[in-house]
Image (tube, rainbow, N blue to C red; front, side):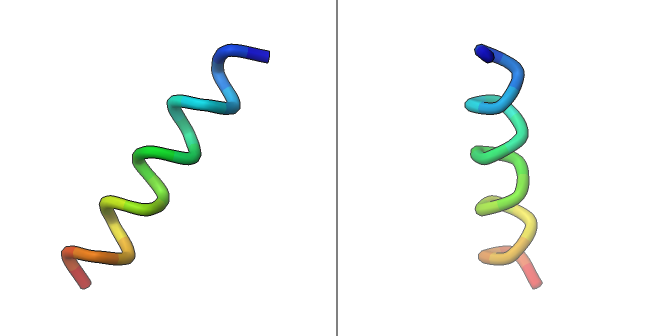
Length: 18
């Protein structure tokens, strides 16, 4: 699913910003 890619990017960005 393409949405999975978007969620993966957002999840990684949130972990980096934390």
